[in-house]
Amino acid sequence: MKRAGLLLLVAVAPVATMAVYLMGADSDSAGAADQKAPGAGRPYDEDKSAAEKRADDKLIASLPPGLAAPAKKDLAQKLVASAENSTLNWRGQYGYIEDIGDGNGYTAGIIGFCTGTHDLLTLVERYTKDHPDNGLARYLPALRRVDGSDSHEGLDPGFTEAWKAEATEPAFRKAQDRTRDRVYFDPAVRLAKLDGLGTLGQFIYYDAMVLHGPGTGPRGFYGLREAALKEANTPSQGGKEKAYLDIFLDIRTKAMKEKKAHHDTTRVETAQRQFLYDGNLDLRTPLTWKVYGETFKVP
Image (tube, rainbow, N blue to C red):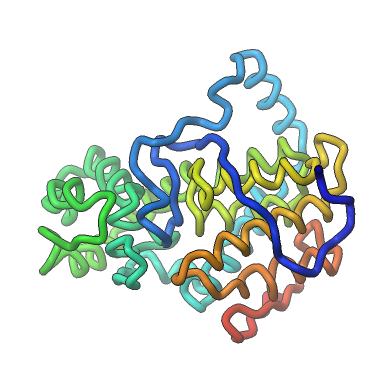
């Protein structure tokens, strides 16, 4: 049975599975290796006919840009950076790299690409195809070997410094932007619009895609959405937007608490859910929120 259309103040819900946008599978982008086994997924709209996909494209083209508007997209990056890097300066994170001890090897760049979760490997492979003499190309054999694990074999020493050096190159920064959009931002915003969600809902999907990854498993983004669909209708199905998003956040926080690395759910509870309870479905500024006890403001 789906929950009634009212906002709940307690985060509880089961988790299920759905399909995936990228052939990369279950993940936390800066999260658990067991959530992103390369090649285990398929596009979420794989079963749609060409005519249905064209109809989706036509519908999205008729809608307001929402989170895809330049100012809102920049705001989205600031919100994510506040949770991922404790800063609003998301453009300062291209050269970021460290092993945060979450089982995914090195986490790097503007969206937390990981050596253990396939997206960093895909990024470097695509970048090397266009720029074969880049400083990361020599690490590709090692990146392929450690993909799916937390190993640094073949990467130490040198990979972290090579990443930082390459991040000073405008072309590599653009490559990070493109991978972020192709893997995380674009599919999240597209699906949110098809679900009838406004700008806040689009961001909620995007942030979930970033943290949990485009996966079909219990803690992957598509799995979380599938679980929410079992309990509430989306606006495009005739449901209430606030009620659906509240349930989605309930399910998401439950999944986060199951992983030690993401046990702190303030990026949801004192940011996204607060925006939701304030009725700010358009993600209007000014905004004030807290993550890990730190206050952030955007005028």
